[in-house]
Image (cartoon, rainbow over all chains, first blue to last red; front, side, top):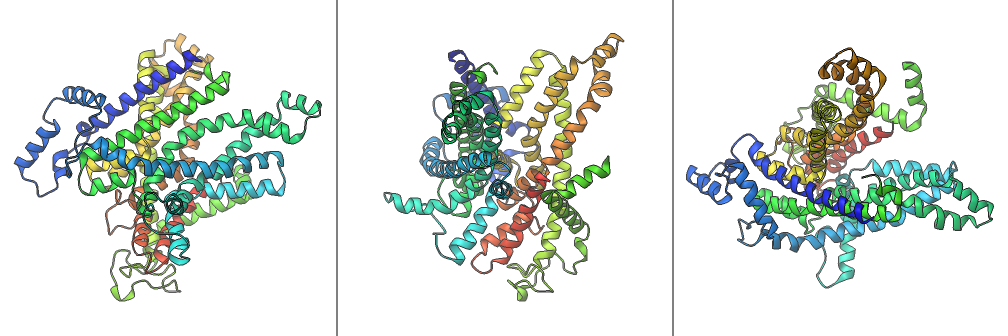
Length: 314
Length: 261
């Protein structure tokens, strides 16, 4: 296990490093003058030169990359062009809002999707199973930003049940939770169906295995078999999928934050693009990418801890 | 053989629905010019009309016919999907075969490259890229390719590796065939089939990426109609009228249903 954990962590570190290199080399590879795009059409040539010097864009690529890593390792992601604050602090301030949204979405979709999947597997072929099947396909069919806009239209604008903007008052957890309902509906809805299908499939596989038959032969209660024996094994692939799904959820969260005018990393990047605040965009993309790599790492490690077979895969 | 496949798809309710929707969207894109309205022409006196016989989906905040705009949006969606998936298909095929057949060090290097590309959440990649390029259709295509290609390449690589040790490849090698000939004539035909299925199943995902980017204003520029930009217009004027938002969202839901068909 230790060997697997070390190898997997090492891989995560390398992947993060390479994705950072890809991110900065994008500036090199993309045709056109980034300074011209970033400063807008009104910038004078002198301004562009100054900007290039400030960003280190006039140096050779290797030096840019080396410098960049030096700075990232010391936690310096650059300075916000507009406010002159550290990008790291700006992003970290917004991170809790996005994390809260993602955590709530994973929470409710797992609480609903996993039992639904179990239920559908146990009563396989029944009418209920088919209804769950159709519902899960339909929920997967809905892109989060469509759910967000439709949810806003129906529940906020037409019915007036939920607030349309913001994240609620700080220090009022209930109000914040109230503001989370619709955004987390948008981010999590597709996952309910996806998780239900995943769990159903792996449950069916596990339920047909020998040790389950043995448990039945011993006369154990069906409920004990389903939830204590089968689910424990069937849940493992779901954990890995959830870890990878965080990346998907970060994407959905960007839409939810924009549609519901919530603060958060997605909104931060979106606003930074319209103000051409390039360091903030890059810093925030880096941190979310790092966070995503961390989540897949955690999911893989948990899965390996639960299932020895996974460890030999790397 | 073809008939039986088609028959099977039609008998599945979801499959039949999916096929119908695909046909409708393609027909809509083809005949978008025949609705009698210009998708970009402003008619301020006809703002926010509810759906009626003359305006099937109603009109938007500039009085443009939403049905026409949705049909023209299908052109953008299908166009981006076909161009972007072709590029990812070819790129994934080539890079995957190189990784699977080439030397070990190249394989590890390419694998790391694929995994690193996949470590970006798609929207984050789109946001970072568009900051540099400015919003355009090309940026959308690039994002789609970067998002899809690594997955295809990984599949192709795994397949190539298993084909590499098969007997017909071995016999071609003994006959003195060069690596590029083995790849092009013996391995590629065995890969294309599964990859075509994989790629066409991903079409809805591609359309969603296009719509999502246009929704964020990172894709096509106004006044060109895209499903995402129609939805975004509808979102901006959601208090005035519900119909633009509904019209923009509906077609984005549809293509996703095809995935199971």
